[in-house]
Amino acid sequence: MQKRVYLMLRVWGNFIDGKWVRSSSGKTFKSYNPAKPSQTLGIFQKGNEEDVERAVSAAEKAFPLWSEVPAPHRAEILFKIRDLLKKNKQRFGKLVTTEMGKVLSEGLGDVQEAIDVFEYMAGEGRRLFGHTTPSELQNKFCMTVRRPIGIVGLITPWNFPIAIPAWKMSAALICGNTLVLKPSSDTPLCAAELVKLMGKAGVPAGVVNMVTGPGDSVGSAIIKHPKIRGLSFTGHKDAGKYLLQNAGIKKVGLEMGGKNAIIIMDDANLDLALEGVLWGAFGTTGQRCTATSRVIIHRSLQRRFEQMLLDRVRRLRLGNGLGKDTDVGPLINEAAVEKSHRYVAIGKNEGAVLLCGGSRPKMKGCFYHPTVFTNVKPLMRIAQEEIFGPVLSLIPVDNLDEAIDVANGIEYGLSASIYTQNINSAFKAIEKMESGVMYVNASTIGAEVHLPFGGVKSTGNGAREAGIEGINEFSEVKAVYVDFSERLQRAQIDVVKVLK
Ligand code: UN1
Image 1: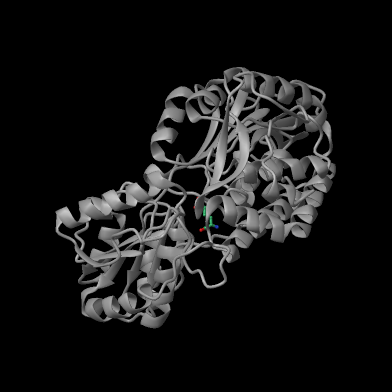
Image 2: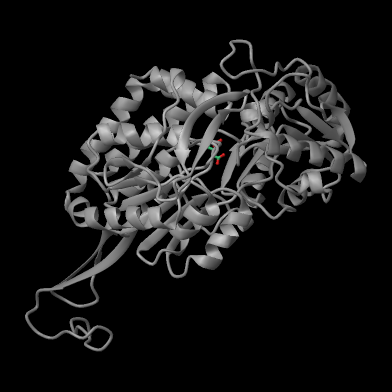
C-alpha cells in the first residue's frame, strides 16, 4: 500500500468531512520531483471557492463535537499522530525529499519537527493554562480560560511541507478548533499523506479538511470566508499583505520571510562560524525563512574568511537529495532557479564581487550552484531582498555597532546570529538585533518547537507559532468573574472598607 505512492500515480481528492472527494472544477494539477522534473508524484484537485465552501461546512458541523471533547482526550489523538509519524518517519522523510528536494537528513528532520510539535501540543492538553488573579472586591473570583477560535484557515508553504502544517494543525486542534488547510501546490503530496495519517490516528470527520489548488481561488476563498474566524499563514510577503487586506476581522498569524544575518566579530571562533554559515546559507538550498543570506564580517577577517568559505563551498556536492553524497539538493522549481539567477545578475550589476557559483550546473533538475558574493554594500538589492535560494552576501564592517546597524537595516526581522567570544558583544547583539529568533555562536536556522517562532517588522504581525505562543495563536482568552457575595457589587465604584 505504502509503495503505491512511488509506483502508481494516484489521483488525490480534497479531504472534506473525512472523505477524499473531487473538486467541482473538474480540473487537476500534478506534483513533480524537483530533482527529476520528469517524475510526476501525484495528481491533485485544482480546488475552487465551492470546495472551500464544502470544507467550511464540514468544519462547522464538526466544531461542536470537537470543541467539547475534553482537551486531554483531544491530546490522545495528537499523541497517536506522533506515534504514527514516528513509525513512518523514513517513508515520510523520503517523501519530503522526493517532493520538496531537501537532502534526506533534512527531510527526516522535517518529519522529526512534526513529531516534536505534535508531542508538545498533545502535552498542552493537560495544561492549556489560564490564570487566576484576585478581585478588587470581596467574595469574587477572577480567572481566565481558553476557548477555541472556531474554524481556522491554514495556508502553508512548500519548504517545510510536513513540519509547518504540523505546527499549525497541532496547535489548532489541541485548542479545539476545526480547520481548513490549503497546502502549497508544490508539495500537495506531503500534505495529503499527513492528513491521511491524521485520519488514521482518529481525528473525527470534518475536524481536519484539506483543499488543494491555487492561491487566487482556494487561498483567497479561505482568507475571505466569513465563517473562518482565524487564519495562519506562512509564505511570501505579497501573499501575506493580500491576506491582511482581505481577511476582514479575523485573528491572524503571519510569517513572511527574512533576510537573516550572521555577524562574525574579530574575536569569533572562525572555524565554528564557517560551519554555521555553510549550514545556514546552503542547508535546504537556502530555502528557509530562517536561511543565512548575509554574513556581516569584521573587515580584519574578510579575506581569510573568504578563502575558507570558497574552499568549502566549491566542494559542496549538488544532487538528488536521496543520494548519500549529496550536500545540496535542488531548488523547488524552475521559477526558483530563475529567481536566483536573476538576483545573481542584479548583484553583478550593482558591483558586488562574485566569489563563486552564479550559474546552473550541467545537470537535469532544478539545480543552482551555491553562490557567494563579497564586498556587498548593505543597501544593494541582493542584501535587502529575500532570494530564497543558495545566494549569500558577505558585507564587511569595522565594528559591532556598524554590524548591528547593517543587520537591522532591512525590512525583515526573523532570525539573527552573532559569532563572538565576548560576552558583552553577545548580550549587546541579543538586545539590539531586530529579530524574533536570536542565536549566539550558532547559525540562523534550526529553531526548536517548544520555543516561539516568528519575527518582527515585515516578517509578521506579532504572532508567534510553536511553543506556548502557538497556543495563544489558536485560542481566545475569556476573562471570567464569579461573584459569590450574593449581592450587587459594583467594580470601580464599591470600595471595600476594611482599612481606614
Ligand atoms: C521556515 O523556514 O519557515 O528554524 C521554518 C528553522 C526551522 C523552521 C524554518 N526549524 O530553520
